[in-house]
Length: 286
Image (cartoon, rainbow, N blue to C red; front, top):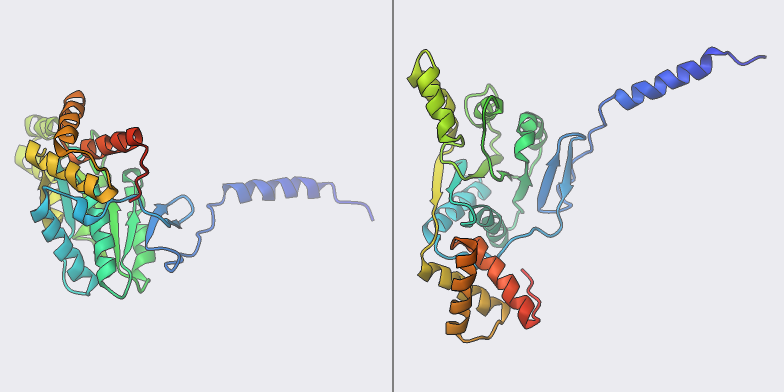
């Protein structure tokens, strides 16, 4: 019996079709960790064993925002009504740090683990797929998008609007959405002003652009800290990590550090502490 000459060709065609086929979605294992990163290309929730975050007590100068977000997240974890939250404001002021710290704090209080799931801004168009996975899960989850903003002809904000409120399915009861942004309305002012000047109906065009932020029941504003708050952040880190130096010396070095960075913020304070600990030969662990 001779081999069919068409078999090698058919095998190559089959291999090509396999490569073109979308990757098989991995099953979600919510017992693997308390935090995950969403990978839409293969529908995978990657477990994150150690989340990069600071303890909630080390976040200074944002006490009101801390209390509001902690209370909102605590209610959500208990199965009570809670709001989506937009944390907006100056860079480096603790927005994403607060989300991660609140998640950890609530999990320390409760018996059932609250899941934190990070979705990258460029993957927002796949949010309905992620919600489909989470809707069928027993766990309660906070979806977190860091540095959320939209520019130019980017229309993915319309998908997010429908998911947060107004879609036929809406947001699942076991899911809440937290986002951070440097922009209060998630879009640059010149983009809004352009709509106002060129649209046939300016007010309607602007409303379309800014209405996404209305889908967040909580707006928490973050602003650059004053010098006393900056020193309080530095002192808290020094106590926590055992950096025993006279406060006057540390403050003088911190001022010089902030001047070279052109800002005072929680991020600048953390960068200074890392430099100080390195010069002192001290290891710091969060």
